Length: 294
Image 1 (spheres, rainbow, N blue to C red):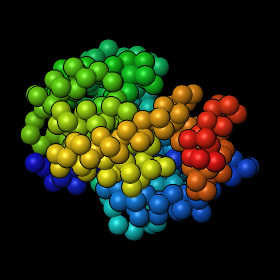
Image 2: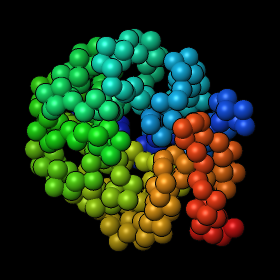
Image 3: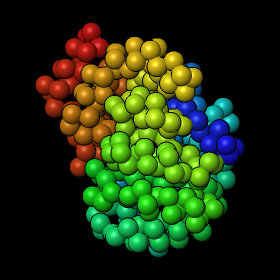
Image 4: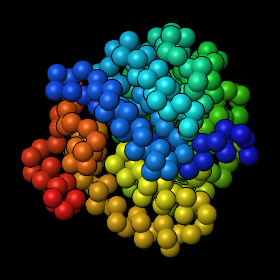
């Protein structure tokens, strides 16, 4: 097992970006979230994931968030930095401009909207990996990108490109996941990107999860993942059963509106998203409060 596969085994959390009422980044709230995650026992942090509303952050804000996160984490856990998008040429520039010196790896979502062919996805990632100063983790999330990266493409990248070291797999296709787990190189990291499917995917052999729900439930979620990785599926199921309805509420409208509603009620952040994102509708937010016993 590779060093990175060991380092990023367990729970990573795609951190939200808290905003103030004027929609500026709320760095004190970000500090509170990071401390909550680390104290909750997560194994690593992912900054600038899509849960962090990266499509509505400008370049300087992204740089500021990455530097702030590195300084706040201060080496307590590894940090993975999201650098994804649909313009290959611009992403190569981003890899040179976003501070990655303290990153464990780069997480890069498959190109969205363009709906490239499998060959286009392959050469996009090959170009990024060759330009990246850090190992690259693929991110397959067809519900957001409009194009699934199939198992053959992932495995070809895993075998052909030395700097591609893993995948966050969020296709929701269990058959595809099992093919990846069967045929992957021994040092290739495979983590779930679906909170609600994490338990069965871990049972099939995934190495961990990059979670949204972990923003609100870092201890519970990371305990569930560790129980799975230790083979204690009865204990994992007991925790997961308590979180299933939370997953449903978090993703009922959009992400990160759902998890931000939970975090607001928990006193971690204020409930603001940048357009076109919007907070949860009143009825659904009331359901969140009811779930939390408020």
